[in-house]
Length: 267
Image (cartoon, rainbow, N blue to C red; front, side, top):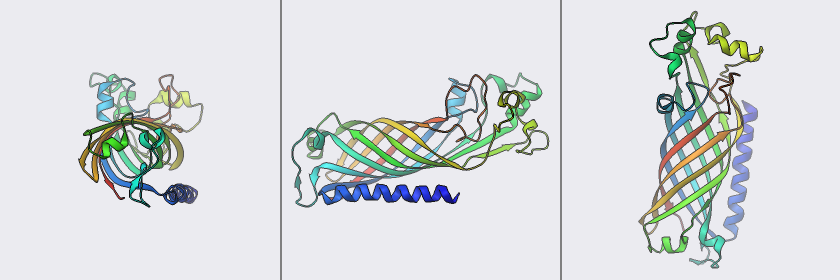
């Protein structure tokens, strides 16, 4: 765990250095926070199944910081009128999400009475993640005009990279209830694993890519509300504590966030 904490600290320092570099150029700042829901797409349940997608949902919280290129804090004036300054912002954030995980879909239907169906129903998990990272946000409409109140909504699209520290939980009530006994899980996972671990509650870290779309709403001269839909894809398949090798496992873990937030302009 120590190496993961050290990596997170290094990333915080790196992000702080980038922000400080922009601050020295006089650009203004925005801070905010958000709360939202997460639909975790993992190895639990069935792919493209509504019950799985709606059942494995959790909570997300985060704090955000923006570099606003359209306005200069050192002179309380607009910056040079360029396309970059008027249409882009850099966002950094620290976020947390947590999702309870269960198996849904046809393989755990009440009509199924096999031992394997019982194993799936007894198996539960929890995905808990901390994120830190940056995104580049693009606003197709003028940022200056939005700040001046020319219109109420400012849609945006964003993409970036986040470093993730994950800490999953694994549990089962089947048989002895021992989560470390592979015989208490779906037998086909063990057969497909080739002897490799397929369940794990070991914490770890990985990189992820994020992309989002959303909009801001001008609340006051110095504050906005925002809503965004975000897709996040992890570089590891053990974020949920499960990594079976069946053919149905087509991708690493990923999730969808729906966030609602508040932003305040510092300068």
